[in-house]
Length: 335
Ligand code: NAD
Ligand code: DAU
View (cartoon, helix red, strand yellow):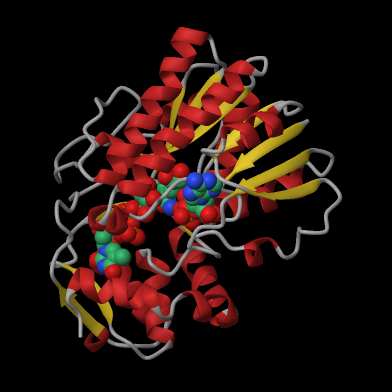
């Protein structure tokens, strides 16, 4: 089988390529990635010489390139996106361009080249925000995106479904909760906090740290995508999650504990505008239909992740400097 993976130089995509090449070494993978600030070929150093792997630097909105690349592929797995909520609050332009228009280009290419099997990677954020007493999201939850990021992902999900209904394009969609693990860009909560602490800097908790997310180790997410590719029903959506709801403050304390540091390292900063209070996922459908479930316990995954950032300082020190910190200070008014 030959697979076009988009966004394979990013966090989840690079872990996916590593997962897939280990499990299915005879499959061929073409990785199409524009290498934005979040894309990094260092994430795939161990794979770059694999004879069944090829990297193409390019934009998913480049229709000529995409049409050329899909000609002989059996499957497209679409990870490429602008992925950081805070950046979408500051400027949503690239989110619309990549997440909406880019997805359209890929769907058209799949349609125009023999209706290629298409798996679309999406997020729980399309469902909106939950209160403490609400039932978790599931596949029937109405869409209610509330940030420019989640609105752009919701639009791309709707497009993928529209191509299934209108053009019979064989799509599946997964909506997953917060991922963590190695190679995550140090702007997201867990890698930002770990790397700040390694540098002796405080960690910026938004508001009171009461917001709740459901965290899943990245390999568990990718095993879920694998299960959908192999066993999922065409046209269906599958909700994936870690069954691991936790407040931001609780995570912060766990990280501090693993790093041997105290709560004086916490800095409460102004809240994210429109900050969704709680995400949680009911993963019954994926469990029952796919036989998939998350395997890695949060304590174990977080410990592995802390160790990885401690042992790979060269990987994150370069990308965490300069313009990124300026952006961050502007957003949150930190000194
Ligand atoms: P990431 O930001 O780490 O990586 C995104 C990758 O896409 C980068 O390599 C980047 O260079 C590439 N890219 C961006 N724009 C592109 C374009 N126009 N053309 C080609 N490549 C482009 O993101 P991630 O956290 O790995 O997320 C991957 C996917 O998973 C996204 O679709 C995201 O919405 C979804 N998702 C993420 C999470 C999470 O917790 N991180 C959870 C659920 C779903
Ligand atoms: O739920 C899935 C989504 O998870 C993905 O679709 C997104 O691509 C991914 O970025 C992530 O979105 P979040 O906004 O939930 O992740 P983030 O790591 O940015 O923030 C997690 C929580 O931590 C959130 O409640 C905001 C808070 N936070 C975040 C940062 C960066 C802080 O308190 N301080 C911070 O510095």
